[in-house]
Length: 428
Image (cartoon, rainbow, N blue to C red):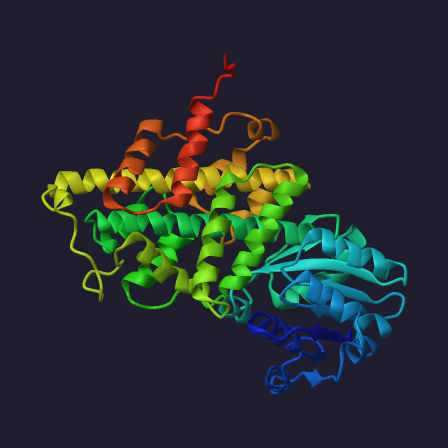
């Protein structure tokens, strides 16, 4: 007998996830957006009038909603899933939600004999449509084996991140926090390099050929140089992910100074740019904060400070090397911080290494550090391979060029505290 699959949440990501499933299974779908349902109907899905109707017509129901609170409402609200679910049915939550909230929903469903597992998604709609998304799954052995055929219809890249529901969401939370930190930290340092006189194309070449390589140097900076967009993701959703990471750190007692700095910067961006802003809009926000433009000749681009105009080839090479070292230190610190957050939550180091290094949170630093990271190393000094003097040189250059480097200065502060731990003293 063919398994019947329901899908709720047909946003940019959910519509592609449901579309992949409709190629393999009979799919029925629901969303608050009628146009989204009609588009999926054109791809072969059946349209239902409510979540309750989805539940009555499905063996397995998948959800991809903005927040865990939306999941709770869809499950337990009027005409919600719970009214149509019976014992033995199963929910797969693909929302980038909060693990603890998801676990509470799962516990309540279990009282009625309904199972729940999470399968968070890493990848934009274009990646999902090609079947190349990374799915991060949390759940028991029995449930994992049961949902695996459904998930592999979406992508072959399915990774079990833990035995508890919510473990997949925690993995995605860590991955997204690492991605955001490397993204914004790289942008602020690239802005400093441009304002100091280095062409963006030179910065891209240096960072991608050195130890600073990360998805921002590989994808976003080249897109900026070419005058095109690199992503279509709501700024509010990225801020939500970072808020959850910071709150998780507070809850489980893990210090996340760099992720905190990223959260502050994203919050300032969201407050300034408005509720409809996209993550890509942070490029202009960073340019405005730095008082420069990434692309030479762009309207409003500043003339390079005269102190940097006559530096010559050797000076440019020195500045480029310094920039590479700064981004490398950023990615190293983010790797340790994100890993500590995930590990304290309960994720395994092997799973963290395997998933992060094929997802958007990866960097040359994570690819080098994570495969050999042991539990004891998380408690050890996190001293960068770079010297503190180099990090301080970058901080001085940022002051000289008038570019705020909120994230990088947090990295420098962490390094200073590691190299020169404060000694106790008594006021007399």
